[in-house]
Image 1 (cartoon, rainbow, N blue to C red):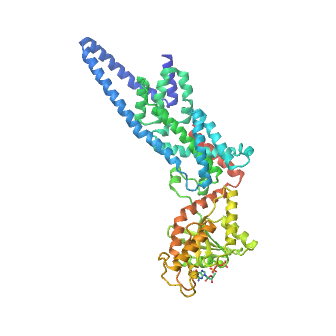
Image 2 (cartoon, rainbow, N blue to C red):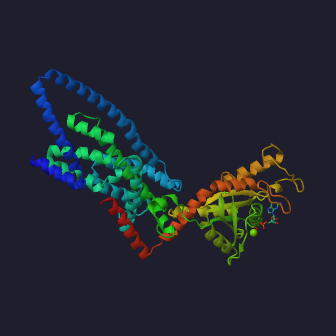
Image 3 (cartoon, helix red, strand yellow):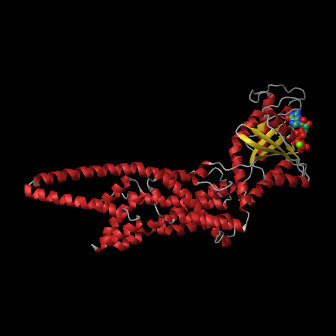
Length: 511
Ligand SMILES: Nc1nc2c(ncn2[C@@H]2O[C@H](COP(=O)(O)OP(=O)(O)OP(=O)(O)O)[C@@H](O)[C@H]2O)c(=O)[nH]1
Ligand SMILES: [Mg+2]
């Protein structure tokens, strides 16, 4: 009796004092009614009838149990499975290195959970994961042990708690009442309050965590002592796995240089969480750099793109020979075309162009079709690849190869409009060969062949515009990464602000 009272007391504390009163208001009337029933059975001699009805009820409830068990399996488990499957699809802004790392870390997540599956162990597992990811991004293993700072861990926690809560809210009914602290205390409470409390707590856990079907399943399992396929335990295991996968994703975001949490800082003012989910971040204009050797036709392409798209063009003179033009195309409303000086082998030009290209979201690499010398382009490509490999936190721009001046692949004066690239003619074959050769030489697959002869209509510009439209979303991601990185450059006040925000998020969840 004493234990039952203490168990009710604990239950009251954990449930804002509502559940015990609800139970009592149910138990007292049912008890009184049962008393009257027993009296009536004894006094009127309805023993046989009573036993018969009892048997039928037991059979019916067993049937209900079976049905409920099937239904829980059919609805609840797939929902959590679905969330786990969604977790496997990686964000499109991740680079190959991030994806490979995630694949390599998946067995580590399973290994940690196998080693120690309790809720209490999760913070240790999460730290181990963050440490491991930090280590993979930093070469020096000694430093990697402590390669993350307190604000970083708190920021990861904030992101995980927000995303995890969203997933749970979407898939696990009633989960908004969950408190991780409750779950973590659960085992201690169960040990302290003995077997009766255990049943009550397990029922309570099901009530708080899952759907009404879950409550039914859990209650019946506990009360009738039947093994119910360990469904809720299994689901809890899946939820733990989900939480660690979220930690892994957040750690890769942080150390891979795509920390999404900073999206808030890119937005003006503070808005509600729901609005934040709906609202697209304010974008800067997407920067499209035109890169290539002298005379490749970069300026001609800028003019052609501006003219053919009837965009408002405003040339903003730049001191370093870089000219910027505003323009818009359908689906990509705010572009800046950065007309870069042509690569001519001089260090001065090279340095200006290299600096600019690293700050572009998309690069149109313009190549002159009838010029075989590719040494400058190849050297630039190698240097670019090396730089981005050495700076994994930076996002490389989207590259589109443009084979310009294909009209010059035919004898002078023989270029005729309309011209087809697919009719199998000698010229079409020459263009295809030049494309394949340049694509392979510069590792730029999917090159677009165009021609912009002076005083003649441009050829195949529409395909290039289409390609830019296709790549617009990727270019936006590059820009967000770049801005996040810029915003992430060290500032004590911003770090303190981060700690404050992250702490609010974490303690909000672990209330
Ligand atoms: N026939 C033909 N001529 C072209 C084509 N594209 C550009 N030109 C000509 O090539 C010359 C160089 O073009 P630009 O657009 O100035 O080349 P650029 O890459 O900007 O050159 P720099 O600014 O010096 O690096 C100009 O005379 C253009 O008219 C083309 O597709 N066909
Ligand atoms: Mg030019």
